Length: 438
Image (cartoon, rainbow, N blue to C red; front, top):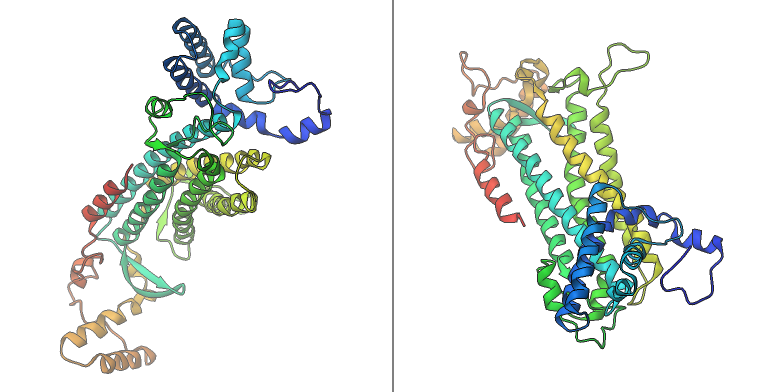
C-alpha cells in the first residue's frame, strides 16, 4: 500500500492490513471535510506568500473538482492508498503535477485529520440538534393534545398517583432540553480550529491561523499547538458523552412505551404496520421498533466509556490508537440519528387510550388526593394518612373529591403548581429549549 510519507522501507502486507484496519472505509465520511480543510489551508498559504496567486487558483479548481466527485459519489480510494488525506493529495498531483505537492506545506497529517474530524463532528451535531428539536416539538404537541387525559403514575412499578399523558410526554420534552445543553457543550469543544498546529509543535512558516479559523467558520482557535493535539479523543469523548445523555432519555421513553403498549396496561397502541407479529402466535403485536431503540441507546451509552478507556494513559501528541476512535464513534452516531428519527416517527403514530381509569384496579390511585383533601379540611396530615390507610386495608376506600356527576379529570383534581398535571408549563419548557440551542 502506497503512502506519501514512505521513507523507502515498505511494511509487510500483514502490518499494513493490521494497522489500517477499517480506516479506509470510515475515512470516506471525512472526504468532504478534508477538501474543505485543504481549501482553507491553501487560501492561507497564498495569503502568506507560500503559494503564487495562479497556483492557488489552479489548486482551488482542482479541489473543487474533487469535491464535486465526492458529492456525486464518484470519489474512491485507490487500493494502494492508505487514507483519505493521501488520496486527495494524490488526485491533485495527478491533475496538476508538482503544484499538487505544495498543498501540504505548513501542516501535518495530525492537524489535517483533526480538522477533518472536527468539521465532521460539528456537522453531525448540527444534524442531531435539528432532529432533537423535531422530536421535542412532537412531544410538546402531543403533551398539549393529551393534557386532559389522565394516566396512572407508577413508583416501584406499583400504582401510585394520578398523572396525565400531558405530564408524561412533557417530561421527555423537558429532558431533551438537558440533552441539548450537553450537545451544545460538545459543540463548543468541537468548534475550535486545530489547523496550523501541525504535528503538535507548530511550524516555522508564518501561518495565519486566524484566517483559516474564519474561513472554516470555527468559533475560535485551539491556540496552543499541543492543546490542539490533546483535543483528539477529547472531542470524540465530549460528543459521546452528549449522545449518552440523549440516549438515556430515549431509552426511558422506549421502555415506557414498551410497557404501556403491553395489553396488561393498554395505555397506548400503534398501527399494525409499526409493530411485528409472532411466527406462531397470531395475536402478537410486538414493540420491535422501541426495543431496537432501547438496545441502540444502551450501546450508545457505552461509547463514552469505550473512548475513555482507549485514550487513557496516552502522553500528549499523536498515537495510532486514535485511529480506532472512528470505529467506535462513527457507528454510534449513525445509531443515534436513526433512533431519534424513529422515536419521533413512532410517537406521531401513537394512539392514546382515553378510558384507562375506568378499570377498577386504579381505584386506589387517588389515596394521596383524599389525604390532601382531608388536610385541607383541617385534619392533621398523619391522622388523615392513617385513616385513609385503614380504609384501604378494609377495602372501604372511596375518593370523595369527585361528586357523583363528575368523572375523574385533570380539572377536577385541581393541581395548579408549576409542573403539575394542571399546569404543564409547556411554554416555559419551550423557552428552555430555545436557550439551549446552538
